[in-house]
Length: 399
Ligand code: PLP
Image 1 (tube, protein in one colour):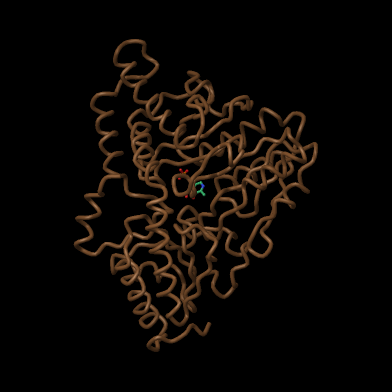
Image 2 (image 1 turned 180 degrees about the vertical axis):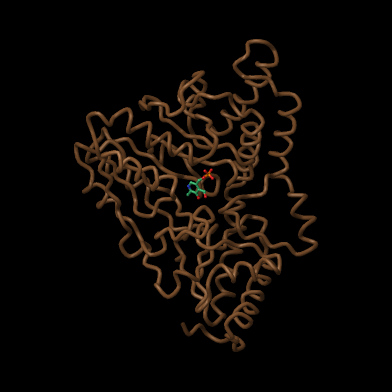
């Protein structure tokens, strides 16, 4: 994919952006496609004249790119405003479709609020929600299968956890629950895995998959839901019947075009970016291991794109601001939680002493070893300045 000019310019003033799980900088291809669509594709795709057709062409092109990236059919892609909306459509749409006869859904205990809060709303409305907590850091397909019965209409499990990078065995979970009850609809929040790992709908075997544009170098304000052919789903937004009736509202053509362009650019580089990020992640792990008072929460099986770390005796927020003064940007836990404790780190069994002092470092393929060095140097300074911890040269971790 093309170079990120803005970030390159900013690099001269040593900007180190390690918050890519919160959002990514739109790539040049996306920026160009958005601009082009604003200028030349501004018609309403529902209009029958040439302006409408020009806009529809851009939406169709983006739909084809997403379908190709997932190994899906174009008609299985529904554009939404974000992954939160995709997930609402999945959960609320299924509840509406199947809820008269079946009243139970099963989710993992470490879901993003997009799933967790929607499930909670359904619980308040009288549905039964079973949450499967991780055991020894991992959720078990067998536990999901045990929880599923004839009353269950939906199982939802994310692919990659946004706080720790833990890779959940979603494919195994969906296979296990379908063996137990083939009528159950399966949903996967694939936001933190999409275009970071090879993701084919056939292998994942989910009926519904949520993805987001702004996590993959596209603009904010656009997401998509994969809806497997034959799956019945009631819409949440009613109106003009756009997106095969599943998501009424005039399509955000420029944002959708930008999403398509980013997906096209990224699709070809999944392995190359994975290798670059793995190298950077391994280097950072080795540097952090030299620092007293720093604990790495994400285990080696986690996605290389996310590294959760705890810094002894230090609150995450002041640490974050200290790092930002050096133009190093990370987040505390999950950016979506905005200061609210999500309970996900506890569910993963992270040492209680580190819960408030956890920061999330999230990579893009553009991060370098120099970025990792800058982060480690700033962490060293922060520990010394904010809580008086001095590093002994090449000391082994003692915490
Ligand atoms: N799911 C996961 C795992 C996420 O990390 C996020 C955003 O951080 C979302 C869902 C929500 O995505 P969006 O911002 O597109 O609504």
